[in-house]
Image (cartoon, rainbow, N blue to C red; front, side):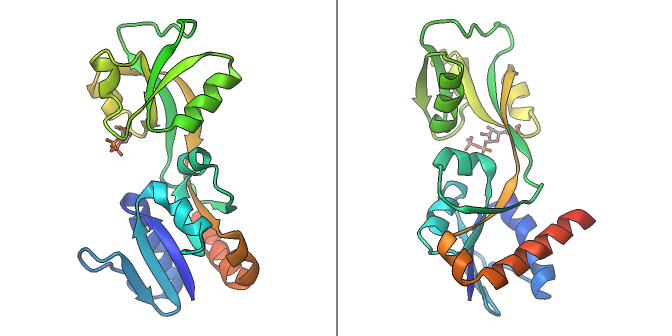
Length: 205
Ligand code: PRP
């Protein structure tokens, strides 16, 4: 039995399509159900930020999760494959009408990605005051609570509609196939088979 944690939303849909090909069988979660069992597989739907937790603790053997979440959580997981979908960027953004001054003392940065933000600015020896938020990050500079944000940018629509611009890109993100290190040891053959199928699928795409 292989247990697979998928992040709710578009990435789970994309991943399930690939697993349908792998298992030669349709995969549909019923209504509000969070577990789907098919053949020797158990799929679970979790919040994206929680995927590394389920995989690290062995509740799931493998998972699919964005590189941003992996970097933010600094989880010790086996990174099996860059899936090359779910692409977006982690970027610094600020109001279009100001030139962001990185030398401003205690630059206020709103973000849900505290660790990525800390690491980026400390590498550049810039001291920042990080304001941890859980969503709607773009609002913070609009109401004067932050000078800038560090957030995910996919289409750029959210930034655009809130009169924000990109000042710098911190990281290119895509979805990764990851494994629990113990599961990878015990179920290496099965896990490598899945990795291989995904690899071929990406090549064909
Ligand atoms: C994400 C991200 C941005 C937006 C970027 O937010 O935090 O706000 O999507 O996408 P875009 O560049 O295509 O506009 P999400 O929808 O997850 O909402 P939240 O930040 O409020 O949780």
